[in-house]
Length: 257
Image (tube, rainbow, N blue to C red; front, side, top):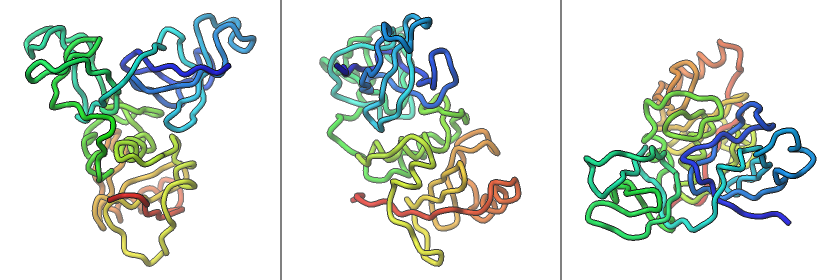
């Protein structure tokens, strides 16, 4: 029978095969369903690896079994990144570095700090799970300057589809993990001549970008090797010139307040 667990490490690569290439990443506290335990035939020869499916988007892959835990989560990291300290004191040694989107179990509050099983996290960096953001672009702007990382889903490295997913999930909007699936699943297609507005999405073959304003994109991209703003006309011309073709879809998200 399939079993649901939580990610117990700050960050883990979701790989296409045991010890294989990274497809995506999972953050602390995210829920996964074990679909093949370490004792299964397909993972034999790779002790300590399990096949899982991420519950946030159904993404499959393999992770070390040691990354799994069980428990409860109550809050998520709403800042770009934070630390879990050894005491409720910002001068105390840090134990963990945690990315935006990590899910934590807050046991109590001690002044400006929230106690979690792994230490103490600033309350200012946390948000209850049932509290949602309203603007996915504002969420994504938290990642400005974050290094580009293929398959990345964290403040320590992120790619174009990871950036879009982070913004959507913080607003309570279901979102696939890859840009091709996002193009198919997200929002309504805009006519070619429809004016763009903040929060719209532009898609290319293998790439996606937020519209920050009618003339500016926000995206994680290899040109800047970072999350960056870029003039829309410059980006579309550059992407076309480098051989990735024209925009394939213009989409407007639904369900935002």
